[in-house]
Image (cartoon, rainbow, N blue to C red; front, side, top):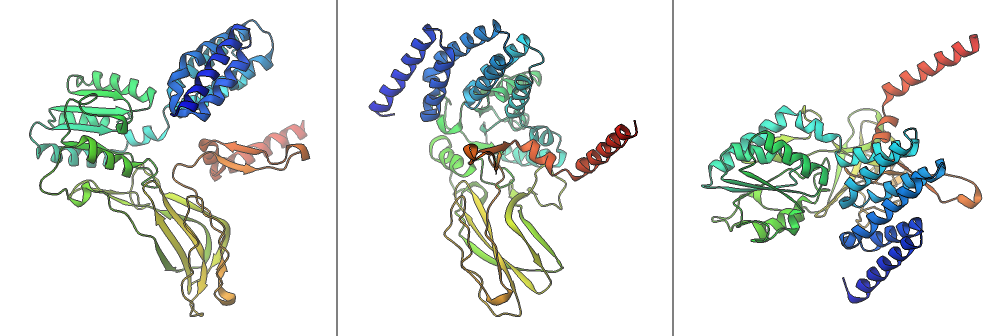
Amino acid sequence: MDKTARTHVKRAAETALHCLSQGLPVKALYGLLQLTRDYPEHVCAIKQSFLSCLAAFLDLVSCSDSEADLQRFSRVAQDVCEDEGLGKQAQFFLEAALRVDPDCLGAKENLRALYDRMVVRWHFLMLNDFSRNMAYANAIERAVSLRRDCHVLDIGSGTGILSMMAAKAGAKMVSACDFNETLFSLSRDIVAANELGGQVNIIYALSTSLSVPRDLPSRIDLVVTEIVDAGLLCEYIVPTLRHAWKELLLPRIPQPSVTETTIPLPESSVGLPVTSLGQVDAIATWFDLHLDEEVSISTSPLWDISWEQALFSVQRSLVVAPGDHIHLHSSCSDILLDVKLLGVSSTTQSAPPPTPAASSSFPAMDTSYRAGSDFRSEPSGSMYAHPPPLTVGVQLEPSQRGATVYIERHEMSRLNDLCFMEAYIISLRRAIAAALWI
């Protein structure tokens, strides 16, 4: 951070403490919140001031009979959890708000959302995915057996399951790191319960912040990690492994195998033949993950595995028929796989595949290509494996236009749960019919 930014942070923190001393914790809190958004890398520098303001706000609310005050407190406490390092504190303050008023709906909803963020639900699916876990266990056992006195680093260790696999496979030392405060605390308890605390050391940090010998006693022999999502790259596995190769791993002779390097993927365009009459609503992608030369797993829908496929949405459904070709364009960066639907053409027209628009993380609408009357161009958009909450534009009063609605992922899943919706509608109809009968 440069001198100007450093001065700004210092002054803002001092202003917040002054507001606090004047009995204005709300003003102090929102000033600090804005500071964390402007300089997120320096949250720790103002953390104590932030918590002091929040505690003062809670004291103020505790003496108030106003439901609005408590709802306001709940929103502020929920804002705190946007900063990863303050999730535990947000939990404490939200639980305190519910002790003040157990019926406060806002505090209940925010606490539930916070719990969902602290340990996302797919962790439970992964832990119960026997085929996936056995594949990792077998690959880790083989890798450890090839290295004498092996020192293993588990990146993004989560619950610690891969770390424990490495320890049980015979690794002399296992270092693990995770930057989720809840999982960090939980994984230490899990490792201790499995009597592996002497072998596994868990560090609360991002792997890219680790260094030798400050955090690790020596360079490591082997990295194990599973920071891959349905879209493969959105959990930053490529830059993470690149840093590990450069800063943390021992040099390898001979050269590493293909599965231990990162290879850039070129952009490509492809035309896929349509085999039956139907409608294109989304593009699904999956991948094969080669854990070593013998073991691989796939996220294909044909596999019974906890991973799902990545979906890339299309903004307008297109009807297709046998003889048509669906034209796709894909591009890949270190952190993002992007797939666009360019359009559909008929084989009755001898047209070249469409030219893709300039690649970007959130692609622009592409309506530039037409292949005669049989080509149906599609403005493309993408839904990535780890999208932000769905943003839906709404039409409100003239003074409020431009507002957005944010829908959490579990709410998106519920909206697409047709069985639930049908059962709900049937139940609602019965309830209405019963009420009318009475």
